[in-house]
Length: 527
Image 1: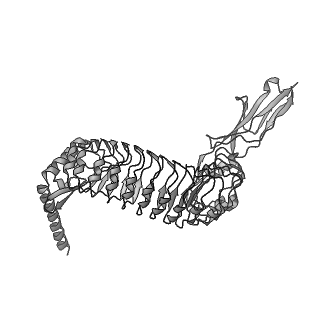
Image 2: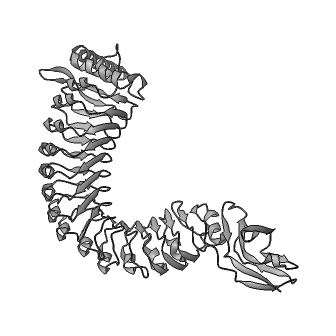
């Protein structure tokens, strides 16, 4: 049986070898010459991975090259897959001789210049992927002459100019990405004719104007990324026609509200990012009716309150309302969102105590409450968040923190606590339990009050800072006056020179880079 297997394997190997040699002997000369031109133009001797591009190796074995037999044409090159290959230089015109190419994947290289005019000969091309290079110049009109194109990936380059109206004729196009370039101008109305389009990425350019109402005809569109442009105006009612949309990102533009009611027709939405626009003070209640919505970013939109209806969004896994002016106490309706995995309420003007009920959201992995006005202690119920990965309460007025000795965290969460009134005992409970303390510099602890001593009498300053403190540094008018191991400074004979602004800085035994300091007080030595 073993001999039979070996014999069969030898036959397969010989057959494959014969197939490769046959392919080599019959590959069109124009294809071979075009490949050699690519190798020379793009510094082939220094490629990272796909280096075997030389004779006597058969073309069919050249790395990243696919050769197929085309009826009536013989053996032709059909695919070039050379992504992340250290290629640099400009594409040669000879690439247009590879007339049976179906796929070009040159992503993540350092190719410069324009897309050659000869590409108009690639009538069989379905996939043009040139993302993350250094291409420049305008987007070529002639790509609209390639009837088979389904994928255009030209993002993360240096293309400039406007979007070609002619591309609206590419009826087979499914994926179109031109993100992170230097493109400008308005979005073409003609692109509303791309009836088979499923994914579009235009983010991080300089587009202006409005979303064309004609784009409402894109009924198969699943992803639309327009963030990071200068688009303006209101969202057209026709957007409700994009009934297949699952991911919509309109953030970081200059759009204005109100959002159209027709958006509630987008019942397949899973991710909706609307932040950094001007939608107005009120939250559009119809957004709470999306049955599949999992992620909602509504940052810096002018929002001033959270409606009770938001508690109905039980499919939500992530909610961000950062940089709005909510004010008042924590909106308790958010504690009804039992499937939340992240909640961001950064810089929203919230005040009062952090409610213990918030920590009944046991799926929470990331909680950001920084840059608000929260006071009091972080509730002990924080320990309920066993899935916690990061907890951010920077820049509040918090004073207490739970003991984490008995934590049941599945991960090693990161804590950001800076610019509060925590003392060393709060920081100790994090690091002593092998958790990560990202930031911890605190505001001055309000422990001391202005005091007056008689000239010639003992001057005594005492603090009650918590934690394993190694040393206390006593400052007057910014100058170090004394170092003690006890939380007490005693100067037996006070003099006029001891008058001034005093504060204390405590140095921890192990947290050497962090100092806890008190408020400054005025010490007066009277006659």
